[in-house]
Length: 167
Image (tube, rainbow, N blue to C red):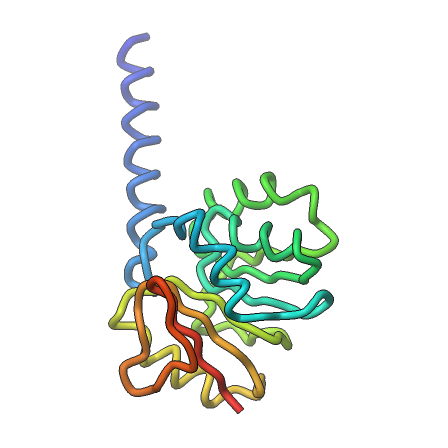
């Protein structure tokens, strides 16, 4: 019996490790945006009630929920199935405003949105810039936590947040 319990725990551990680390090859591992940065980011991007925010790598759903509390619609892409389930449960109160998609935002066609929030690693920021620049989403605002787009001048920076405008 003890062998079965150890096997189950070991399997859960290995599957957790895999689901939380493979995403680094697509943008970033799960590191939640600092709670105090979320309202600041939403203030900076300055979307109005009824507009739509896209979050690339929506993790635990905290940005989506804060956006919904402000009257925004929010769409999140997340690769980690555990986080998709968790954030869907956590955001169920706002299910009419929040849509969480289990998928790779690099290959998916993005829905029409007014703003984008990201917390990606630096090596992916230029790829993101190219995708947004070549999309039909413009005009659009993009806000990045912690990492900047080196080839583009931000409209505003504040406390580790970078706001960009695409016209």
